[in-house]
Amino acid sequence: FTAFSETHEPDEVASMLNEYFAAAVPAVVAPYGGDVDRIIGDALMVTFNKRGDQPDHAHRAAGAGLALQKATLDLGNHHPEWPRFRVGINSGHVSVSLLGAEGGRTHTIVGDTVNIASRIESTAPTGGVAIGPDTKALLQDAATTPIGTLHLKGRQEPLQVYLLTSLVREP
Figure 1 (cartoon, rainbow, N blue to C red):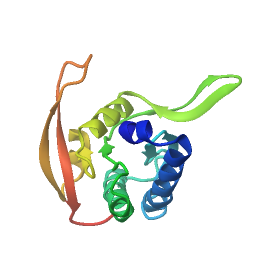
Figure 2 (cartoon, rainbow, N blue to C red):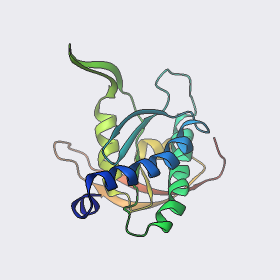
Figure 3 (cartoon, rainbow, N blue to C red):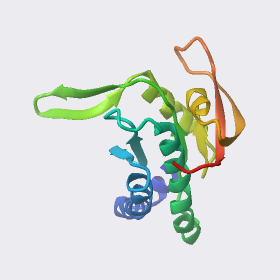
C-alpha cells in the first residue's frame, strides 16, 4: 500500500481503496455478521461477538477472512499494480469502550487481543489469512500451516502464528 500510495495521486489511491472495500465489506458483513469497527487507511478492522451473541465468533471471523480474500482476488487480478490484502485474526477478551473526549470520541474495542491481531496481520502472506493460537484452538476443523513464531515487543511469551487455508464447515 505504501509503495502504491507513493507512486499514485491521492484520488487514485482513494478510488482503488473504495473499489476494494466495495468488494470486501459485503463479503464480511452480511454472510458472517462482522461489524466494521473502522477503516484505517487500507485496513478494515472487523469485530465479531461484540454483543456476546455469536458463540461461533472464531468460525465467523475465519470464514470472513477467507471470504474477503476471495472477494478481492478477482479485482486484484484485473489490476495487477494494486496492492493485495492481508488478514490477521485473533480471539480473546476485549473492552468495548467509548474513547476520547468531547470533540473527538470513538466507540471501539481495545485490549491486548486487538494489538496482537494487528501484529498477526503483518505476518500474513499477501493474499493470506493468519490466525493466532487462541483462534486456532477454537477452530478444530480448520486446515492450517504454521507461519512461524511472532515475538512482540514488550511481551514475554512468543506466539505461534498459523496460515488458515480452509474451514471444513462454514459458519
